[in-house]
Image (cartoon, rainbow, N blue to C red):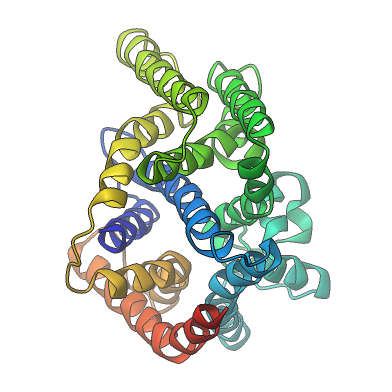
Length: 330
């Protein structure tokens, strides 16, 4: 079921960047939060059920994640670079440092501090790097590095779970920057990834009572927060509504997807496509803008969908499939 869920979430991110809103809320933020939960589940599943269970090292897990994230990312980045070089769309400025930071991915998570060293499209509003939503991949990659340690050292994991939730809470009370610390940087979002990790542990029956209580406690606080601050008081930070809804709805949905073992048709294929859709939709938007096709109509959305599916299908068969064989051989 997770393949269908991933594709739906990737398409919500696409829709959000075409200006689609639901009661003033950004569905892309909601989707990214659920992607965070899914990432925590995937890491924990890979480590506990595959790599560590079979006596394989954590270094092989890191190699698996590199092979999962970077090849398709490089593919879409190269296509984007070619498009920008040929068309000069967005007044591109190519420098070794900026391109290197784009290809490393992790620096993109800190765009708010090092924007000048990331920007490629200089004349768009706002100026952009090669793959705008890739800042969230930067957050994921950092969590991939951290989670093996936090799964092994449970007390440290619980300490950082609550520490991250405190930062998230301060952000949504506008004590610190609500967008950066409540949605983008791992200091305020690590606990969301760990929700996914704990959900996988519940499914595996490998969760401790303290971890289960901590997950239950944070979930109840999020529900109470949404009811009191959002519904009643109408007091919230930049993306408080979307991130809380992502946690409240995403937690049971992801758990249901984890335990639902039905082998639905196209589940794996849609899961593979979802990453390409996530990576390539900005390129599609820029391409249509370059050739002068106006947004805000179904024809525009249909064209974007066709372009991202085409790019994604090519990526799956030319890049993902060969790389997948290497990953499975690990």
